[in-house]
Length: 86
Image (cartoon, rainbow, N blue to C red; front, side, top):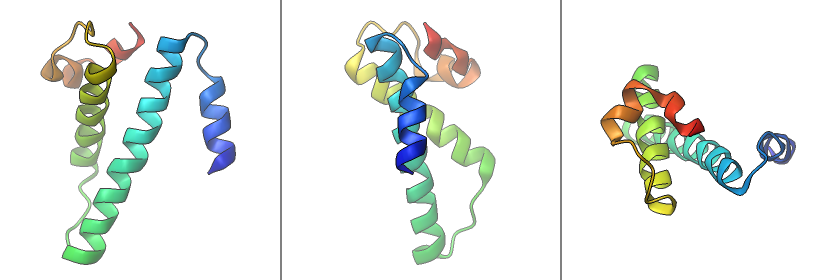
């Protein structure tokens, strides 16, 4: 996991890009963790499309938290996740 995090971190250059990449990483890990816990402790099935939507919503809302000028609404981000490169 540490190697993945180091290499993931190296993908971005600027502070803003690095922050976005790190947000994607942590939102993905967090969402998988929550889905895993629901599967284990509540007997729920993982729905991969829903998990992807959860990751995208988490990323967008966290980015909005540290980049208030992020020009997209959460629904826009779900439709066009490439907006994170902005």
